[in-house]
Structures are given as C-alpha cells and as structure tokens.
Image (cartoon, rainbow, N blue to C red; front, side, top):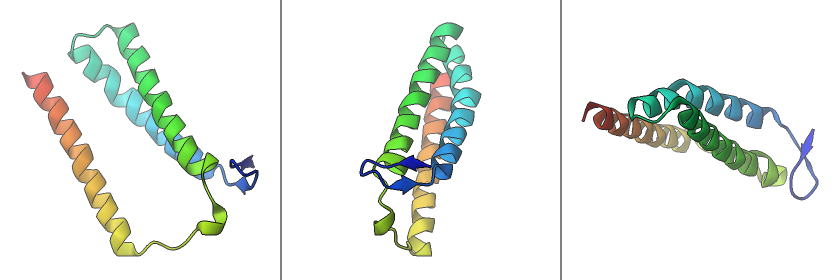
Amino acid sequence: MVQNSEGEPVDPVPFVVVTGMFFLVCYSFFPVYFLSLGVGLPAGLALTTSIFLALAAGAYNRLVRSFRPEVRREVPAEIRLQKIFYYAIIVTGVFLFLTMILMA
C-alpha cells in the first residue's frame, strides 16, 4: 500500500489504472500528431513523454498524495454522468482542433 501526505494507507489501483490509460492514449496518438506537424521522432517522443509525466504527476497528486479516505462520499449518478458528458465534449473538441491543424 502507498501512503497519502498524512501517512494514511491509500489503495494504489486507481492511480495505476489511470496512469496506464494515460500512457496508452499518449503513446498511441501524440507521436503521430507530432510527426504530422513536422516534429522529428526523437523530439515528438520527448514531448509525448513530458506530457505523459505531467499527467501521471497530476494523477498521483489527486489519487494518492491528496486523497482523504475519511472524506469519501457517494456522488450522485446524474453528476457523474454530467462530468462524463463534459469530458467527452472536451476530448472531442481537442481532437477536432488537432484534425483542423493537420488539414490546414
């Protein structure tokens, strides 16, 4: 078990799952986009790695370091669905923006 900033044990599985998803998405899409934009392969991989490390650090901060087990509460389903909807709109917008850049 890993510990949060107060020394309490925290389940590491959510962090591992989210970081694994970030890894798959970053290394599946970003090098191709960077190559299409004219960035060389070593530089594209370096940029992809830096983006992945920033996302992993953010996930660690949220899911491990600042996690408070005693504050956990159930979030209503309508709020969770609303967040998923907004995140889907944001991801779609980012991909549309990247597609327009590549088509220009």
